[in-house]
Image 1 (cartoon, helix red, strand yellow):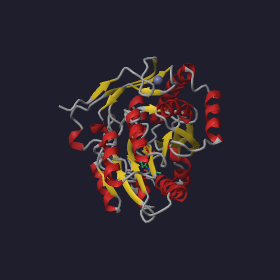
Image 2: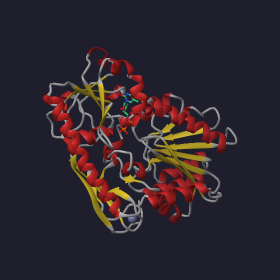
Image 3: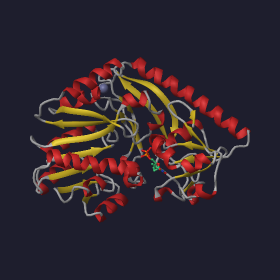
Image 4: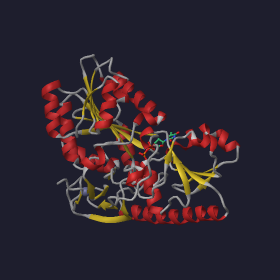
Length: 410
Ligand code: TYD
Ligand code: ZN
């Protein structure tokens, strides 16, 4: 039988055992396990959500690993549902093709390429291949004209791809390298794919943002690692590869776009970010202990605000039903007593109920006719865009509550 989860004891990056518990968010349902109405009375799977710091390699990670089959085989997260995200990746695909693709015969492989939006944008310029384990999403990718293998990426699959398609000029993986438990194997697979003259470019949420301007709600079971460049360098160099460039990009708060290859000249950007991380003390346990204290203060503040609003008879709804929203709702215990509904543009999520707290998810058009007093902005990473888009609601007096990192009403 499929084992749903296991507890790991060794660090996923250095293999050491110098791990300390930093933050315990309790037992939680899976952040993307939206429920059908008929399943609301059934027992939901809940797993510990605890964050650990490794004093040897400075990485931040979960040790309670949920089986990826459970997390990623059927996925509700569609990149194209968030326009800014889709545009960002389309642009990234074009930039990578401009920089690294020389002929239409070159192969670009994307690991966890979701609905294929990045690859579809460059499929006329190179051969493209998406490795997407979510069968429902792989199908969408295929329909957009992108050849798609509906499987998890690992060393064995990398070897098969090389046999069948040859080596890749570019391997891309966006918001995947935090999700893969066996990172060493994934990097070894990539190394096999790119051989000595390809590049690996990936984006991953930056832990410096998480503990600074970001929110603790980005912590959920799918995110096994909260990466710093410092910890990634440890891993990448240990496998005989090099990080030759890095930049911070404004996605999910702030993400790192990391460029890896075997033998390219290392740019100054790498030392600059490493230095910045050192200044931020991302290699020190105390930094994360302080972060955990802020998380619990944030919880108290938001709960007390919501309680006051409800006492004063205000109607509140949630904007977006992102995975991170479910960490927030579950950790704070915010359910239908507080929120009437969540609106979300993702068709898959509409008509379902949020995991754990069971708040109904409806389409965004609901806000045209059913206007609350306050809206809790769960998709806070799109604050600017959403405030602009919802100007009419705001002109009507609707207030938005930004929940993290500091509670704010705008
Ligand atoms: P996202 O922040 O990408 O994700 P997660 O925390 O799941 O990684 O998700 C944003 C969610 O918000 C996604 O479900 C789509 C939804 N959304 C809206 O409903 N309206 C919007 O205007 C935007 C930008 C996103
Ligand atoms: Zn370690």
